Structures are given as C-alpha cells and as structure tokens.
Amino acid sequence: MPKIKMPRSNPSLDMTPMVDLAFLLVTFFILTASFRNPEPVQVLTPSSTSEKMMPENSVLITISLEGKVFYTISGFDVRKKTLERMADKYKIKFTAKEIEEFGKMTSFGVSMQNLSKFINTEPGQREKFPSTGIPMDSTNNQLSDWIRFGQYEGVVQYKDLKDAAETSGRQVVIEPLRFAIKADGNANFIVVKEVIKTFTDLKIYKFNLLTNFEKGPNE
Amino acid sequence: MAELGEGSGSHAHGKKGPVRAKKQSTRVDMTPMVDLAFLLLTFFVLTSTFSKPKTMEITFPVPPDKNNPPPPMKVNGYTFLLTKDNRVFWYSGEFKDAPKNGLPATTLTEVKFGEDLNKLLLDKNDLVEKAILELKKKRLNKEIEDTTYKRLAVDAKGDPKSPFFVIKADDKAVYRNLIDLIDEFNICNVGKYAVTDIMMSEINLINQATKE
Image (cartoon, rainbow over all chains, first blue to last red):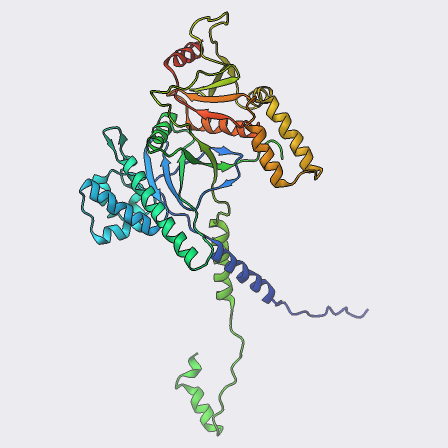
C-alpha cells in the first residue's frame, strides 16, 4: 500500500486582516473614550427609566452616602473665574498656580478655609483627603455662593460663546447651563432637600437628577 | 548580530573579493507591535463606558408667598408620604386632623413599591392614562405625527380634570425612594406632581402607622 502523503501546509497563516481590525478597534476606542474624572467620593445613584442624557454644561452637586456635599461646574475657565469670585468674597488668597490647578479639578467637598490645602494635595491622594462637605447651614452657606457665582460665570460664558458663534455665522454648540444633582440612593432625603432648598432660595427651580438607566416594564 | 562586528565574518569576505552587502529581509517582526495593539485594545474595551449617566428632569414648585398662601388641596389630589424602611403611605384630598363637613379625618394607607404602587397610580390616573393610550394607538396607525403626539401627550397630562400628586418625605426617608416614586409617576404618565415640605401632623400620622 502506498503511503498517503499529507500535503504539507505552511503553519504560519496570514494575520494581516486580524491585525488591521485590531488597530481599527484600537483607534476607535482611543478616539471615543473619554476618561472618567476621578471623583473624591463614590456615589451609587439610584436607577430610573428616564432616558434623558446628562447635560454637558452644568453645575453638578454630588451628595455622598454620609450626606456630604460636593460641588463642581463644567468648563475650565468658568471654574477658575468662579474660584476667583469666591476668593474675593471670603478674602482668601490663592496663588496663580492654585487657581490653575483648580481649573483642572473635578468635584471637591471642602470649605473655603480648607480649599487651598485640598488643591495642593496630589490628585491621587484627594480621595483620602478628609472632605467634610461644603458648608451649607444658614449662617455659613458657602454652597449657595458657589452656585450663585458659578451660575453667573456659566451664563456669562454661554452668552459670550453664543454671541461669538452668531457673529461669525457658526452654529451654537454650547448648551445653556443646567443644574444637576447626583445623590447616593441611600443618602438621607433631608440632605437632598437642604440642597434643593439652597437652589430654590436662589430662584432656581429646574434640576436634573442623575440616575442609572433601568429598563421600564413596557416599551 | 555578532557577525556584524570585526570578527571572522569580515575576514571571510575579504578573501572573496568585492564586498557585497548582505541582502536583508524586508520582513519586520511585527509581533511586539501587534501585542501592544491588543493590549491597548483590551484596555480600552474594558475601561470605556459608552453610556453617559441618565438624568431625570424635575421642576420644583416656587415656595409659596407668605402674603398669598396657596389654595388648600382639592379633592382631586393625592399625597404620598415617604418614610423609613422604604415604606410609602398615601391619602387623598385635603389633610384633615378631625372629621370635618361630614368627611372623616385623614387616615393613611400603605402601598408597596412595585406592582401595588403601579396599580394604584394607574387607577387614580385613569383619565390621563386612557388618553395617552389612545394617542399611542393613533401614532402606531400613523394617524398623527410624532411631534403632534408629543404635543397632545403634554396636553393630556396637563388636563385640568386629572388628579394632582404631592410627594412628601420625613427625615428618615432615603433619596432612592423619591426617585423610585417619581419614576413610577413617569411610567404611569402622571403629569402633575410636586415635591413639597411635610407637615408636623403628617409626621405624627406616619409615626403612628409605623409603630403598629
């Protein structure tokens, strides 16, 4: 019986298409990824069936499980200008470097008196910083000032950008400033109400409450 | 690599006459590059989050003017009270401490989150619910446009005959309950609702009810 000779095939196969695809995917993910900014607290938001997107341009108040209040506002320049106004009001001096660093920062939950210490903490260590939350009692309502100055700067910036876009005939890309509250599902309702009261005292009545998406029973 | 040095290799060439450059393979080993590509790919696949957080839009009522107090709650209204342990109580109409005008004093009824609450709301909000269903049917049959549907749906939700819902919470309630309740309102097409401050008499009733 003659031996059956198996045709010897080359064990190496052409991987070019696979590599092409891999690079395509890498490019796609690199371009679409937006890094989540490290926040000083972890907050588990409750879920709802709402499908509205988080507004791009907003004042965001985060309320942690223990009821500490954190603040941030979108926009590098707006943040810096807001801090300058706050520094002016509370008579606390910040160096140019600190203001620059604050522009890059996300949420913070410390009083004006401790803010410079918080800014000078390494970004990686901020989660461990003993944040006490922004004071918002009636005698020392710093949160109210943050919101008020932030709103002012946010509106000014929105107007400037809108005017600039209109005069040059481009489309307006920036959204008007919104107010968002991101609270932990198990946070006490009273704290949320206090924050809302701070807003309503400033005659702001419309909010976006951040939630996780959950599928509704029908549709 | 070693051959490139001044070792025996160059001597050997010297003997053979003209030096000819060694033909080098045009193939580059791409394995490290591909490895890196896959590493990056894995990293981005695992770290990227596609969905931005969703939000729920809500408008809070303007606080009542002291000189101009709001009219008392009409009969066609329901108040939901949130308290500890994810419990919800509700009563209808105006709050009454004691029997008045032949109507009994307010008593609280408990309702469970989920199906019970859903049923209750659908029942109370029957009028709007039916109108919305009707509109949805029309949209499916292409009788009305999407934009028309949206406008009519808003109108239906704001129907003056439809009931009004009020949410109040005591100091033991958690934020999640509020979101769950508002979410349930949205699912049941409740158009008119508001979150307001709780009254002392309501807290007392809740305390009585939760003690049992």
